[in-house]
Length: 408
Image 1 (cartoon, rainbow, N blue to C red):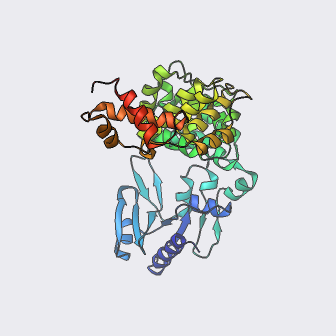
Image 2: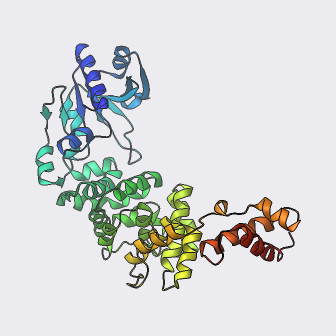
Image 3: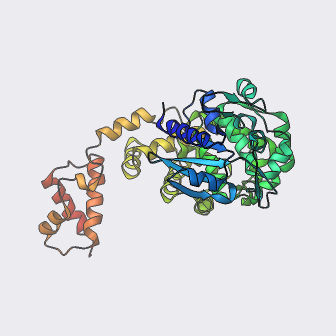
């Protein structure tokens, strides 16, 4: 048994021994029923937060105002939340107030979708008040109760619905889809970070096109930050969305989405900043689009030059993007060819050269300066392209001639 589940069951046992009902709830129940490994195990209980803190020696008050205490057992954190009902959602994301209750059914009734509104007791018995198991078997994402109410409570649920469709290969209930059409403008108030987090989860799906189709067909995409700010690129057309399923790399998927949003290289940096992606991701997407959007027939040497300058991963990603954009020709090198060229490349970095900067300084008798780095970069590229051998004497001779062009 998974050690995290063991920890959760131990927590539930201790709560029951203290006289409080406790259940596994939410995504962990859904995932187990689907034969998937849960990422986390969450416990719901009738015990109040202060009672949970009194029962367990190691706790952290991670969300007392919403009834959540993290219990630590064998160095594993388990979130324990008191049964609750929720008041108004002032910010369209979180309830302004909660009220603790003693009913598991009331607690499950506040959740987003039926497949997430099931519970299990410590012995594995399923509690399913809202036909979540039937919807799992039918592969349907359906709101608990009225989808208009659920989405008005928390606008992010509309995007989560699309993400679950992509993630699980399910369909979306017709009433939920219609509710998104009516309430999509509420998503303008979501944070970029939450939107991007859901998109990242969608990119992990084998076939994200099903979720993206919902975003396009309902018009929800045009109301998601930061896409809603892109006057010339916020409308996502359904045509071409199936191509997201052709690749698995999240950098290529981001690049293709940006391309569909009519992003050119002049405006790319600003849009990447608006997405608030990590610097490393922004750089990778920028290179992917730079190479992919300019993909065209090259000589073998030019392909190899790009390969040396940007690396195998970057060029393979660019090739995938070019394929999605119908810019790649049958005669262009495929990923296997690019990898063969890469493996055959005698030098991939200046540190692999048979000479160093110190060797160049000694050979020329010159002072150290920018010329050394420029010369080493030139020599490495020439050796990579096999224009000169990666041998000390040949490199020193070529390096002296090239370095003489620079005064510093």
